[in-house]
Image 1 (tube, helix red, strand yellow):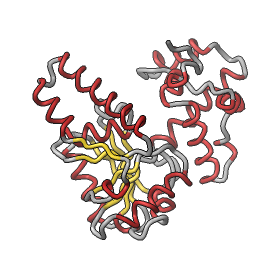
Image 2: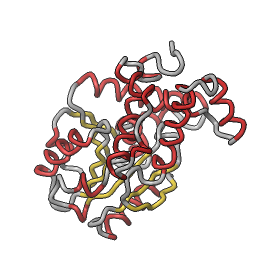
Image 3: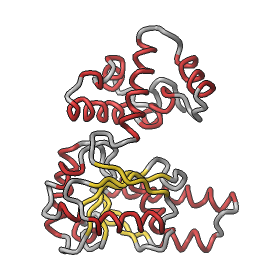
Image 4: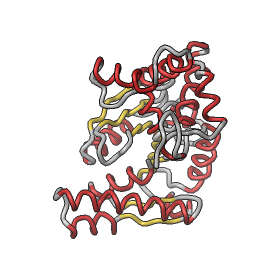
Length: 270
């Protein structure tokens, strides 16, 4: 997600610092950006000069202090509350007082994350969707203490990026994952109980609800570990076992069958 956000920001004219914790992660991120730009060149939606200009606006670093000099910091680390808080806490001590923080979290409370910083009024959710260069939606999440100026800045950045921003309030899962993840979890329960095959379940939603991708295939693309994490956030946040991750989902995650990124989930990938 971080690489996709960096690409879209750079394509919108922003100078971008993309920070990660190891050189191999930076290399992987830049490789994804370059492949995405090359596909756009091949489709004729970008020329070579523009693609190079976008790539040149993105500067990689392992130094958190370099990233902290930004006017807007978008955190996009894995969906682990404690990891996010650690990164935000460290960056907050280095960033200037004017810097606005945004989290790309897909489910964790903005107020909870903002509390790891000294700037809850300048903290907002900006939930992008994957793949970021393709998907138009951004959920802009207003925390309890988020100022109107901070929300407005996030909306303006989204507009400059060519995104459709939808403002939502700070509830577990926001809108997208509060609706989407229980559907995916229910599809996994249906498979677990033998209601239908994986192909049949996906076909029912594709043809019956006009979804471009069935829920089990979508879970593979999201990552089954991410699906489990989000369900756990919903379960804890709403204090309701109706959001408990399906036993089959837990088992597959424990076995390392995480979906497309692992080569195996509900389907197999080369």
